[in-house]
Image 1 (spheres, rainbow, N blue to C red):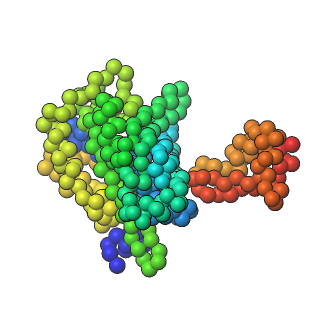
Image 2 (spheres, rainbow, N blue to C red):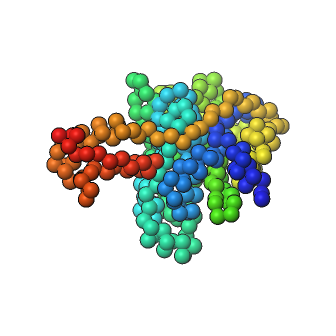
Image 3 (cartoon, one colour):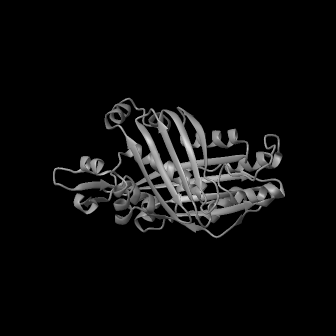
Length: 322
């Protein structure tokens, strides 16, 4: 049994996001690692392996970006494309809740697998990736879009930050699977690095992507030695390092940045959680007209509603809405 298999079996792979800073290089970042929470999300739907891998990547990316919302708010990643997996949705509810689902065409997916076209970029196809931030209170809702042109989520994230001209950013994603007999366990990891060279820009590390203070100019990072060095060091990280449960997040960051000095902060635990409820679904049904509810009645005389995120099925007597 591999180290990954043992650690996943023992529950040693921690669902968390670890913030850090390398002040000598003017960078801050976060390291996300998902294990049991991700595994539970995927197994509720019994996704085929290529779809599960894609959701695992999206969940790691959402966790590492959404963790900027420290106390309240919601961060959502969503794709709409022409690929075999035409929709991905991952919700991060601050400070620690994660849920996800995917919509896919089973026939197109099977055809793609036969042709060996099972990479994330091939399953996504062309369309767009949206990041939506709701910070709660009186804060305005923000949504940023980036085109998906046959590329994966990691490349799309780089495109988003480059086009937004707000914060020079490096993103690295990894997904793995451990098998025990016929059972499998999914894990994923993400490394985010952002360049914040000026005092006014530094507080932007505490904001979600795309939500920089008004009037803040983008940092001229392309020819900055500190950013180039930080990006070079972060780029040496391997998939197995992001996923290896025997290598703690602190040790991994020290391995990458020890020559420059790295400071880590309190990790943020993550949990799989769906906010759907009987009361919420009932309230939603009441907003439909009686004719619309009548069309929802099944052969058993009940209105059945299944949550796309957690697969919980609820049944309601139509008469309770009359």
